[in-house]
Amino acid sequence: MGVLDVVWHLLNFLAPAVGLGVLSAALAKLVWRRDLRTVTWLRLALWSSAAAILALVGGLVVLGRDGKIASYAVMVLASALTLWWTGFGRPSR
Image 1: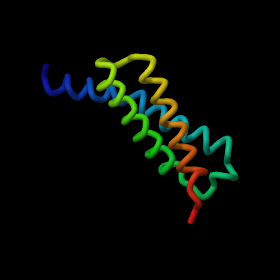
Image 2: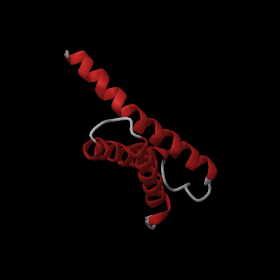
Image 3: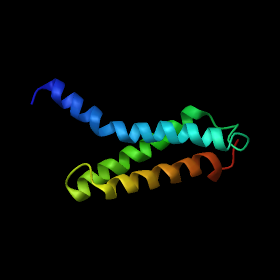
């Protein structure tokens, strides 16, 4: 496997997590516009994507392969909990 193949595999592995983080942050900002006015979209997207990536890597380690529904379910749960914590859980400064 060449370097370009490794890069493509890594990007394709991370794409669902980053996509979920970006879309869920955008939808959260749209639905809870007033409540999340003090939290930037970028902050929500970065934290949500990071949690989803960690969940995907954990699913890969625990289950032994990528693409299992259980790892995607944990990814969605981790993203949702992180969005809640980032947007509503901590008192804003």
